[in-house]
Length: 514
Image (cartoon, rainbow, N blue to C red; front, side):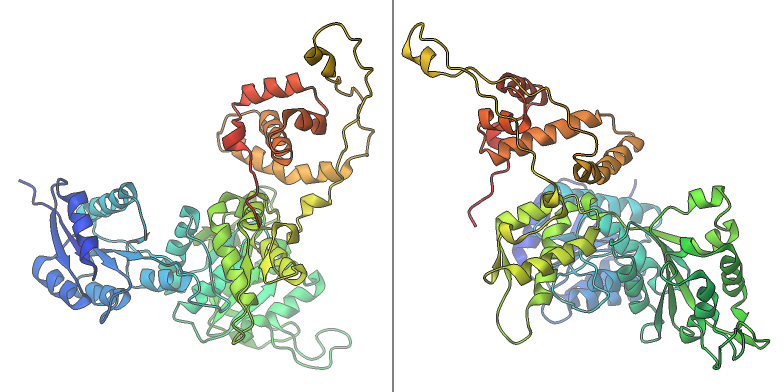
């Protein structure tokens, strides 16, 4: 007969433990309880649980300290941390010490069961793993990663798993997604923390100067060079070299870079002395490198040397639930220390920011918040203070056709009602709405990417539905005015509303009072 698995719940609040008993009492588990870090360690030694669910904030021995002791006692024990906060530093620290997963309070029963049962399955098979999560507001330094979405959880897990090693890491993602922030976090939580973290933007340095920037040069290596120059590899020795936009390296520079990665040695330009360095390389690219392998513009051997561990950063439009957290983080950074003046933002402004597609990702969001804070008339940022790129597009006013009033023929209701104006059949002149066409590009990319992932839908339907919702939103659900804004008849609008199942009361985004 298979022995029952043991689950240890550690929380200084007894109601939490009682809740766990109610959830898992019929799950066929042995559930142990502890109300402090010290009690948890005693229970681990006595009962050898398969999984420990551990509260992060406890008096005395806190969750992180308890986790370290549990891992020292038995590294095969899987630990799930519970927290009411989110901070990338905490998640990476916890992962370094072997946490398996984490739960953000309050969490649903379904989520709790999902995480615990997954951990129990892993414990039954191999009893190994790592992970954890971030608390907003705990850190203001440069390696702060903000987000609690599932996509960002995977980023935290991978970053924590590789932080303590010297393994090369390739970080991929669109511009503005935070590739350097993740690289700094990996460096700051690893064994090279406190050592140099040197950044090289391969796209920003002219090709003729890039090798000198990386490897340095001797006096006289070029005409008019009168001094020795130390390259970035030497400056980063003992620490981390972050190569941003590595896809922009020439093939010649790629060859030299590969040799350094293989041997740790190179010569400065114009020199004969061999320089030996100890550098961890983290590379990043805002475009896929795989197509460059196929057309031979990026060396395959260098790609596999850099791509030992890969982290894919999601664009902001794919993790919209993180936008309020990012807004809070950026506002916190705008508050002058010691002034007590706290920046606030209205719910309507947050809603407006959450709907935007963010082609510039987190960097664009930060700049938007900064600009809004500068232009806001008071301490609270309103939706009218938010300036987005899409608002620069020209507003197209519908053609209004004057129709003659009908001849009186019957009751007053028939007479008083004007017939509905037919839609304009005019076609926009070529080039007239170029700004609108440019704004469509990021939307088109999002839809194409979804179709390439296997989603089945009509791109035309998605865009048409979005236009309908926007028009109804702007007119407060007034169908006649919405049809006028769109340049269609009210009957056509009604057919489209029915076709897409738009519910006026539920679907129209009415801005709350500021």
